[in-house]
Length: 393
Picture 1 (cartoon, helix red, strand yellow):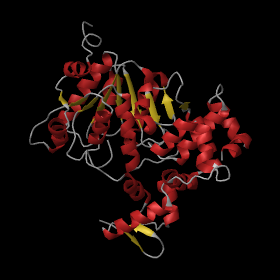
Picture 2 (picture 1 turned 90 degrees about the vertical axis):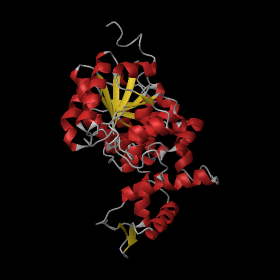
Picture 3 (picture 1 turned 180 degrees about the horizontal axis):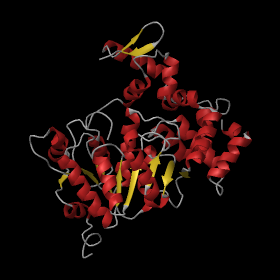
Picture 4 (picture 1 turned 180 degrees about the vertical axis):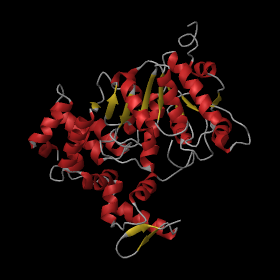
């Protein structure tokens, strides 16, 4: 695929337009990886780290050059290859050009080095609409929480985000309804910086009701995704997106979250990265705060009730404000990401074959067949002869 990309004049031209000063091979290899691998694919990350993006792509897709017997690599090849299409790479670059999206690669001046803490799960590139300079602001706080937020939760998120942004901090969140939206709006309201990480391409406003908010973020902040333009948001991609929110922030504050809120997934990533983690307490009778109380009780989160305590969490007292979170599933519990990706690829109305499901979900045929067997036993999916469908209910 790599050699074919370099021979294709249209694809090379698109790569040069996206990054005039860069080696087209590096640009195209990174874009190709964003097309064939799901976000956070550790095998892809390890292969790229060892061989570089160009040679790793050749290893992944070119049987004539390499005969890899390693089980992990072989499994990965079987999920990457169904997506390896030249047109998909060209369409990604064309979509970015039409949207005015910029391409940021590791090593670029605008690349946020904190994402490298994710090691092999770091993104292979970032597509950005807006001010790429926001990604490397010195002080960064991730504020996340429930989509179905209460007035109390939105008020606290607005207070925290507005105060911190006014003091020069970048507010990082996920662009969702509820706490995320309140945090973004408050940062914009004081003329501060904010970044929204999306679970689909930067050309897709999701949720649709935040179209105007995203336009405001694009105008004075940044909308960011590791997925190419046109990519649809799915449950698995929301969960994968959460690791970027946690990694970019120097701390994560969960303002309001239910017992199984996706914000707990973001908190788990922050804890695993060694980032300070704060949680806002709520009424003990409020289901909307049960997840925050769970973080305080079970996950060593610090109780934060004011922006002063957020600054204290990070040791920012002398530098900021001195004299002058979701979507996803499962919370902090263990989940099977492959199963989520497969369910995302299925429909109650449209029957799909194992091969088609493997391509959409980014899994191998063998893995899809095994998962379908388990899901069938649970009654969650069924084969009606025309193909596999989700069962209603």
